[in-house]
Image 1 (tube, each protein chain N blue to C red):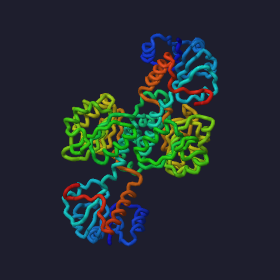
Image 2: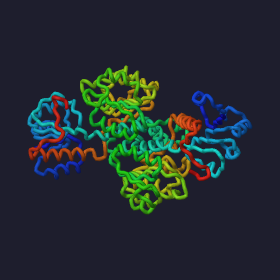
Image 3: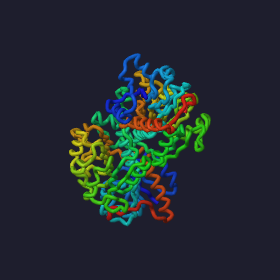
Image 4: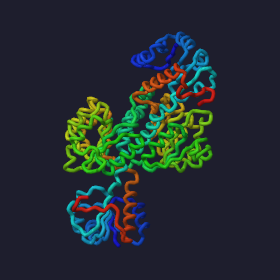
Amino acid sequence: MTIYVDAPLTPDQKELLRSSAPDEAFVFRDELAGEEQYNALLKADVLLGNPRPVEWLKAARNLKWIQLYSTGFEYYSGIQLPAVVTNMRDYYSEPCAETMIAGIMALYRGMDALAVLKKEKQWVGPPIRQQLQLLHRKKVIILGTGNIGRRVAKILSGFDAEIIFFGRTAPDALLRSPEELLQKISWADIIIACLPGTDETRGLFTRDMISRMNKGALFCNVGRGNLLADEDALAEALASHTIGGAVLDVTAAEPLPAGSKLWNCPNTILSQHSGGGQLAEIEGILELFLENLKRYKSGQPLKNQVHFDRGY
Amino acid sequence: MTIYVDAPLTPDQKELLRSSAPDEAFVFRDELAGEEQYNALLKADVLLGNPRPVEWLKAARNLKWIQLYSTGFEYYSGIQLPAVVTNMRDYYSEPCAETMIAGIMALYRGMDALAVLKKEKQWVGPPIRQQLQLLHRKKVIILGTGNIGRRVAKILSGFDAEIIFFGRTAPDALLRSPEELLQKISWADIIIACLPGTDETRGLFTRDMISRMNKGALFCNVGRGNLLADEDALAEALASHTIGGAVLDVTAAEPLPAGSKLWNCPNTILSQHSGGGQLAEIEGILELFLENLKRYKSGQPLKNQVHFDRGY
């Protein structure tokens, strides 16, 4: 069986694949030149990776199984292939959730200010204490009931936080509509947005919602930057201390433009879309691939099956 | 009854005391000059605070009750007074635990580096991702089975961390002696020290233990700086990347001297003994004091009684 790998692997990672599945013939795109790459993909039985351009995948009619290394796959939407397609589903949920909690705790426990003080070799000591806050028992609205939102909730349970979900369909989402969300905004100490980018989430968090937030409340976003109807309204609320702070993994424009007001906002964490990252990112992808390979060979159903044409 | 207050209170906080206990005569050290301070302490019936030098307290034989604003009181160890002594027991546990977790997450999710990047208005983006780590399922040794250690463990449960306690007496402490701790050091991704300052904990964490730590492991300390037998050994391990990082709320000398190597250590959070702090820190102390005052006046047993001579 020929397995075509279209992912940036180190020699060690390639060797891991080969030694874990010694009966298979691995072909690595980055070891082939020019047209060979395309021809090898056409002959492959299995694909690991997200090949570009999209036309190459459309033509790869011999593929029986495609393992993507991403969770999203809107790039391939509508492709009709006889192959089974699997994605990384919830693989990035834990890092994204941890970055949100890390950002909140950085603000509450002064880690951002302390990092700058250390760089400047400046000791402040006791006066820092009275600027700090506790995550313990905070009231939190989580926007989104998917894997990231669930992981955030699990972690917050260790802090005895009080949690309310916003979601259109999940049975345990107390808030179902933007109107219900708006009414509840002032209850929250923290709002954490973990929503995907869809027509319904674009501009969902309005200027009005920002204006209803508590003076000390935090706005956090690890979904899509376009969730905010008006990013400037957030920047103004932060600059004027109308709200307590923000943890932003995503922004309307990325890289964040040099002229963005957010660079100057106080009590603001900008994590630069690093939320899904981790040291062993590639190793985790290979692990899922090898588990699915075992399942594929023994005729078991594969993990994380999705459909290009349906979009999920 | 005369109540001597040796704590830095705002006018509002002093007024809160006076209005909550209008029958008592409050004397505030910071309103007295020179020798008056000492003489007022000698005459007082009740003390709220931690007076220095230690000789002053030794001489205050008229005191019937001492409410410390700290949890630890090794500074007064061995003092024999007829007074009842109460401390803040677990009051600082939650903030201390949260600062430890905040520091660990700051290192794992890059918050310290991101804070500096924001200050410099510098966008790095994707390359950050592969420097990040997850707290999820990490192996953690917690030194100390008191309130801070327990809170740390509770929070870590939200991350599905694997936890082992070091403690001399607690039934669930798997590691009982420094020898057993030494043997287990290399198992840990994270070591979090939450030990009080006693003769037994001084120098407990040896140079040998540091040398047995994993390359990526973190050393965290929210107990006492003198837990480390050799602070320089830690600084050297950090500087040479022999270990992964450190979160230090306490150090051998505080304020940290300008010449300390720790200022320059990579992957190091210096929280400047702010771990116990929070916005309403003083209010919480006054709340306990006023509750104990009510108990004292009505002859009920006081909360959080400790013994100078026993050390707990």
